[in-house]
Amino acid sequence: MRDNASWRRTFRLVPACVAVLAAALAAQSPYTAAQLDGARFDEQVNTDVVSRSGTADVHRVMARSARYGVGVAADTVIVTADSLMLSQTTDGAAHDYDVNGVVGGHWKFFVDSAGRARIVASPFVPDAIAEVSDLTTAMDDFLPPRPPPMQPRTASDADHRRWQRLADSAGMARYTWVADNRTDTQSTIADTVAVHVKQTSHEESQVVWDPVRGPVRWERRIHVEVRTEVRARLVDAVVTQHVTVVRE
Image (cartoon, rainbow, N blue to C red; front, side, top):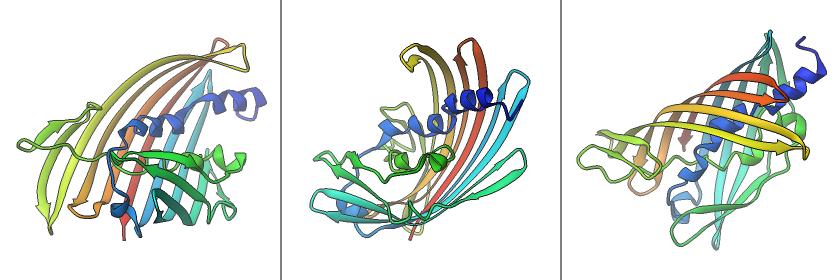
């Protein structure tokens, strides 16, 4: 059953990894180009996906390690993938992916007068790699949200995250945030195929914030449950993702 082509096509329709990341796209809070220029970031992403369709179960574990460099030219921010490793374990079978073609790839975005980023270019990522980790969207929600003003030590922001300020450490401010989200969407693919997706997500994350450079370390722990219905076939997926980013 797990090798059935129809099952594999249905599994690809589960927006599991995309769902984990998409909720944060609107959270790109203001940054300045000066805060990012010359930065180097080390990222570790571990994603666990358990999906079920009928009696067939699939368990995937994806691991991505990356180092990104950031430069600024006029009003354009350029992020380069300096190094990258990607692996996946599916039902106990491990596989490392050749991502050399993506190393050196560039993302470009503009920072407007309000400090918000608009991505205008992403590197080409082959389908075989994108099915495991869609690196074209890696910068969409890479930066953590900016903490809101705290009065005194708790607050909510415009995207309904609940923030708490922790004790400062070594001149750095420390924060945690919690966010919950629920969506129910209908769409059509291939002109006639209806897709119904229900998704709930819960995030508990934290960030260390330098008053001059911005975020220097953050961890995101996200749990997502997705139900996708395609042609009366249900696919349920549970996604757990842990992201750690450290600025040099």
